[in-house]
Image (cartoon, rainbow, N blue to C red; front, side, top):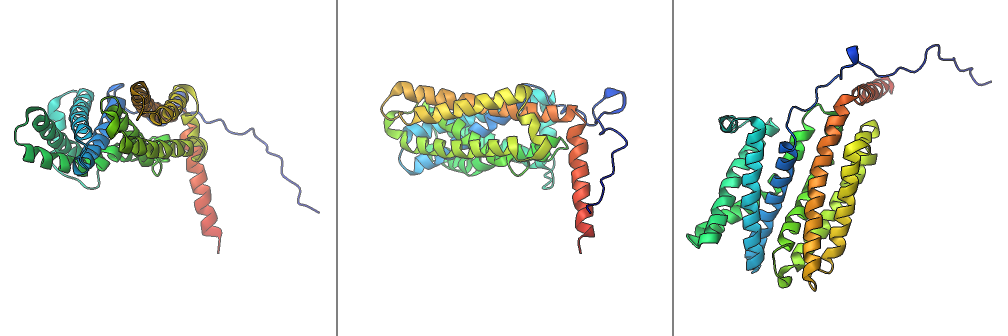
Length: 311
């Protein structure tokens, strides 16, 4: 005979907190400052790397566009960060020490030199002064580009915010893919048809990585995937997917059609904005309901206890 199941004597617990307050505080960062900071920095990093590669392969229009976008995007990113901090001196204080164990410290030391190098490269491009120095600065910015694309994902993942922390293995891939499509989108708006080939290929690769990572966030994190599917964040990420797909489709016509290049570029840039704002909104939502904190904690505890009991 099979063992008789015991009947539960109490109803399943509802996850509430004292006085209806969340267990975790919402992220204190301002909106739209921080989502814009995430977007602009990623686009700038990808653009700098594209510009460096374009310089090596003899694509002057793409190199020029990438340098200008990298400089403008990184400076705007710094402005958004300083506005969030409240005082410019607070950003400077972050550079007093370098702490390898702190993503915020490492990120500050990536952003500051990258912005300076990108500005030097763009200034040389616009004025024609010290072209060799400008090329060297552009190459150095290109080397820092991948770190610019991804360090903000590490920064979010290193917090206690459930939907960000549990997505720590996926967010860097999502941000990298989205940065590449955003950088490519900015380039497609201005470069001539003859230099679109590598940009289109890079954008398609970025779009694939972005869509796969986004799917993983929405379905592969257990309960904390839910904030990526519901409410404002769900709508923004759905819009991001649609815009990314539209950008990929239009980009296939970019070599023959100027209007298609513009539409592809605009769609990719819109997708990047929606992705960053959507991810940020999902993190905020996951701090508001205690279940996103309690259930994963209990699941981890049960797994740990099960492993200890297993011989």
